[in-house]
Image 1 (cartoon, rainbow, N blue to C red):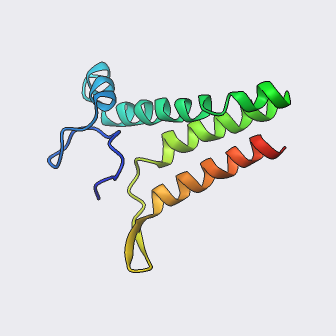
Image 2: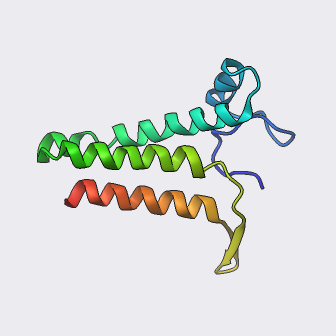
Length: 113
């Protein structure tokens, strides 16, 4: 299964992303560590995009816990092949559905708690 997001390592279908290639070279070809760190970096960037919320609402503990959830969810699940399912005639990635569902959940907790 080819991921729709271009944060992956190089394979026979494409050249991967600059971030993926960086971690692949850094970890000397270890795909597991390179995938984990590349996706973890994306999770950190997603969490940083929400930084204005705890500044305004003073909910730093909730922000920290939910950011950790976003980073770990993105690191552990997003690059796995968990299969696909059909929805309205389209093939949908189960891993991306889980990841983005949890990112939205954690983001809502940060905003509303």
